[in-house]
Length: 399
Image 1 (cartoon, rainbow, N blue to C red):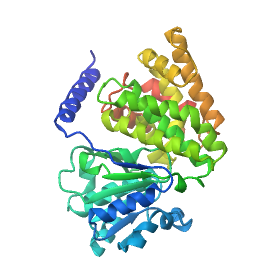
Image 2: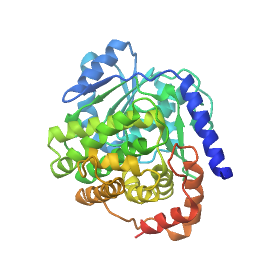
Image 3: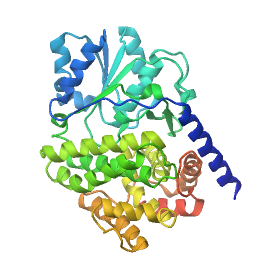
Image 4: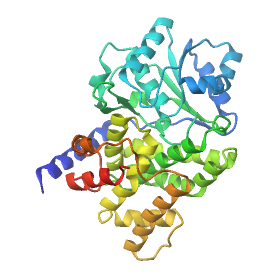
């Protein structure tokens, strides 16, 4: 066994040990049309005094935020709006939100938006009651203090951040992404309200759907068999293959919207138990360096990583083929694995996602590869990324 593989095995052992000592997460979700109002009434009943709403300017200008929190206004619960979140949120955005929260004495946080808003809200909440530099929290279990209660209303169906205790944050100087993870960052309750998703543009629907699919697949093929990760990942894969095309083709299809919201949530529960994998190890780098949206970055990388670990994950990929409806149990395992990878590529094409990006620069390949190889060592992957295959993946996704 190489030194790198030995270190990876030790890392997984430590992860499993720490996870065994942590309390099991508790999930509370309101689902379907009108569920945002149900969540708002729950927040009022919880006794919150003043709520910081974390979102982005486009959602606020579209009126979606006001629609989501109408029940709070009716109940007379004071809210303070922070709409400074942008894609791939930074420490500076977190600092601005924290300052606003402290200035107005907010004692709870509600995130409304996609993964960027939810991730930013988690770190804003954590930093509001601490003088520590959030950069020191990158990793697992480093947020040890009490955090104001956090709630979430996702308006996209992809990141699953509403179901996880992790948050991704970018350094605006180095453009490197860090993951802060720990039990205090898990939202206390969420609403999956299709009313707020009906107007989501097709490209965002497609990108976030491929993001959710990536989460489900990475949880399914990982080497850590923990909790319900496989059951929740299985349900997510079934729902995505059955409904993503419809959600992209007709944004007003409420059944498809509800199904995709639930799929993203299930996939989030799955990765919350075992973390992500090699796709994210690469996607985080091209997202942080070039500002490529996370769902698009995952979509670009996903088929290539599946081919990279095809031998090691053959059985799991074969099972996924059956779940996705592109193969039958009992067929040759290697053939089924290939059929599933082909089905991922076809789904990506059907929803209009590109195969390459013109933002990626060849002169950065070495730098991006170094970061990806380092990041993957902290994930329960079936096969560690290697330099030459990672360079080949970067070349393949560069326009």
